[in-house]
Each structure stands twice: as C-alpha cells, then as structure tokens.
Image 1 (tube, rainbow, N blue to C red):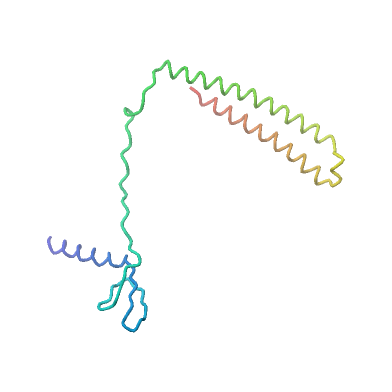
Image 2 (spheres, helix red, strand yellow):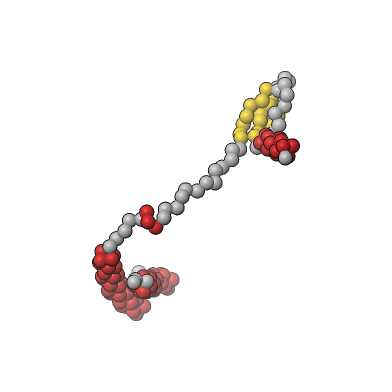
Length: 148
C-alpha cells in the first residue's frame, strides 16, 4: 500500500508543475516560455494555477429563522391582499383609460401625421400601452391567486 501512496504523491507533484508558467532567459538572451523550469536558466514564474475550494457554507435550518405568530402573519396577509386589491383597481382604471385613448387615437389622424407611418407608430404605442396594462392586471390576479 505504501508504494501506491508514493506513486500518487509523485504524480501529484508532477501535475502541479504543469499548472505553472515560467519565463526563462538563457545565457544568449533568448526568451523561452514553458511549463517546465529549465536547469541553469534564469526562470521566473509568470502564472500559477491554484486550486479552488468547493466547500459551501452550511444551510440554515428552519429553526434558525425568525418566527412570526399566526395572528401577525394573518395581519400581514390581510394587508397584502388590501394592497393588491388597490393595485388591481388602479390598474383597471389605467387599462380603461388606455383603451379609450386607443379608440380615440385610431379614429383621428393628426395634422402632423402627413406620413401614414407616423400615424401607425402612434397607434402602435397606444396598443402597446393597452397590452401593458392587460399584462399587469394578469400578473396581479396571479399574485392574488397565490395568497393563502
């Protein structure tokens, strides 16, 4: 068993030199970059790879987390529901206004829109506003569905 351990140590030592880059200058001034340090040459280490630790930090257990009483949690959930309800009402009003602006915007063509593409761009921005408010409402409804 000892010869195999010595073989492993010898292999590990040779593999460690492959991770080091040397800059060697011989007596005639020729520069050589190598991963093996030459004998009798003036060599300096340019870079050396070092192993990286893969140890992770311990995960906290649930008992380490702060506890909240059931009544306090119910109060927080109630506040959250109220806030989400207010956001839904606000977003619905914004959606209705955006839809109204879109209908009016499609019906009229401004004097500055001699080019039809300008009209299309303006109407597209109105359509984008409607789509944004619809997505916001959908996200709020999903959030409310996830409440306990």
